[in-house]
Length: 102
Length: 166
Image 1 (cartoon, rainbow over the protein chains, first blue to last red):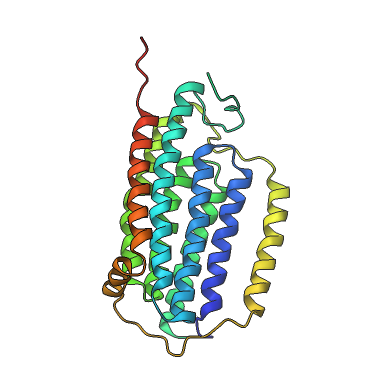
Image 2 (cartoon, chains in turn purple, yellow):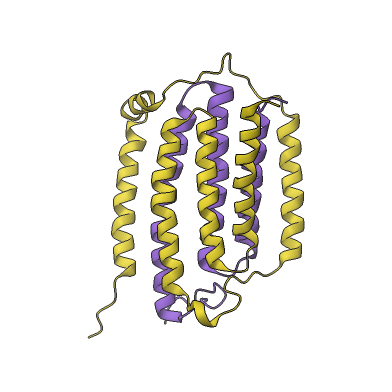
């Protein structure tokens, strides 16, 4: 069986669902961010796979680069917020950090 | 089976296995290090798809940047010695059911949709074409991206500095 578009889409879908599971079940803020990274990677595989198999041009790859850039910005901001929460609450359990001020 | 097919299944197994480790591991250090396998596997999948520039960007930014950032955050926020389960999870069973149904739905859709096929599948260097598109059709999003990165830079610096208490 030749490896085709559906194989890549299924890999992307599995990554997406694993990320979704992470986001749904984790109580640790950093783990939730890791789940978001998995989701973004799954979506990126779809972009690049469609750009390779369906459209034949590189525009899908450009979107993938934009997604990677946004993921970097999201990780920087998200982890800075996590560190700030840790300094105030001394835990990063998202259930513990339910007030907006100290 | 062809050699390339075997390699693809190997890479897919590494990617999905380490992603599962990220999602299911009870120790956050294992989760964070498994992310390395996922990111590297996704980069290899990009290579399979003929996306050389995106693969390089993936290695540089995800493995070199985001992963290191996540590891730093894990190390800075955990007293690793005195906690057994560092990566608590709640509602595993309902989440598994929801995610399983969702995955089977997605796979069904993927298998049954008649996707558009390109006329021919080419393996050509993409970097120059991506650069051209960035400075022609996608110039405005490109500039906006630099603005977003600047805002993220300033925001991260503001958020993570220590407040000076008078």
